Length: 253
Length: 56
Length: 221
Image (cartoon, rainbow over all chains, first blue to last red; front, top):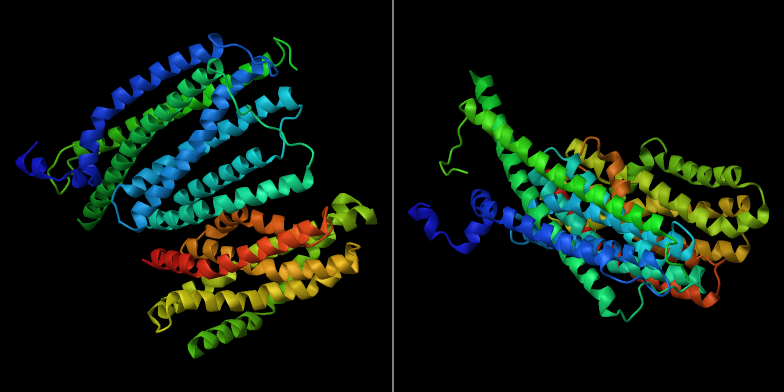
């Protein structure tokens, strides 16, 4: 490191894309290793070292992949919303990179939450899909993710896209409580009799441990993938701007 | 109430689906990163340089 | 206030001038209700049960279809750029355009609802509550639509993305709108729905101009 970079404050090191590439390089491998270890331990607990449920039998094991993905789909949107604030309020240079990298990940986690929820529902409650409050809300969240991904891809200028997507993300964030409230209201209106509690309020440690480990595993997976995707995005923009300059110079000759 | 082995098919399907998507995400992230690095390397080979000299 | 109303009048004049575009949207509205019986069967009891839902879906689709007109034309011919420099703040400009758009698009739909009521075997009570719910809820639809339209105004082929963005946000409006349009379980639920619908509309109309103006400023840079 030169004298100049040594003097850069912590904020600049966070904000400058070049600096980000430098320090994030050292994070990828450790994050990946921790993720792998957590998955190994988690799967061991989830599939082998935990009992079946009194009521649900073996299908309770689906909870160990369903709940983490559901949690991550929410966490990811939270990350995107904070990044959106970073773009609009503080004009943070890396905020839009964080937002763009997170969007497809969030969509994937939500899709997995929906799929595993469906697999859990079929043997437990008889149907592949139930329009209950929770699952319906995740379906809507999934559609919002897809809309945001589509929006990123609709703009050629990614910097303009960043600010527009930030507005949409925040509008969505504000609407999520309203959507959940209306969906729950709608659900109790149409199905007053079927109030099914998933998972139950009190979970014994034998079920809690695999759940926590798997949740941690998926969270670290998100962290690893997010950092990798952000690095890739910085590289992509660098390459694109170089290509543009190269084309411009070549054209000018 | 479900018996011991009922619904194992769904458990398998759930874990398989999650496994495929997760591995797919990892593969996509790695391949995309590699593609961008190759793109930058190609540009550097052509001699296109960046304004600021602070390396990668 | 005068520039505000002048803008509303200008937009209204433009809307009614362009070859009867408003009539086309009404036609679409009626057509959606017409094709449903072909899909569902002419059972009048079933249609009466579904009628509020069909009317609301038709209204939602019609509003989405008409959103293109909100900012696009002004963006293309440069009026939007001029309006941004105007003395009237951009948020007020958006609100004015929203008001004009509602009058030109949603109001005709509400007025046409009796036609659908006849087609779908709605009772008089259901018709009245549906029209009231539409009157309360369509401002929210137009407001959310404005955000979607402002976000995609600079996109050449952005036509499909705005509805895709707006539809998830419109779900609460749909839920409470149909809920308030009677035909649901209890009358208590209907009035609760109407209150929630009003709340959403008020919030949407109050905040959407800020979001849309923000998106317009960013799309134009």
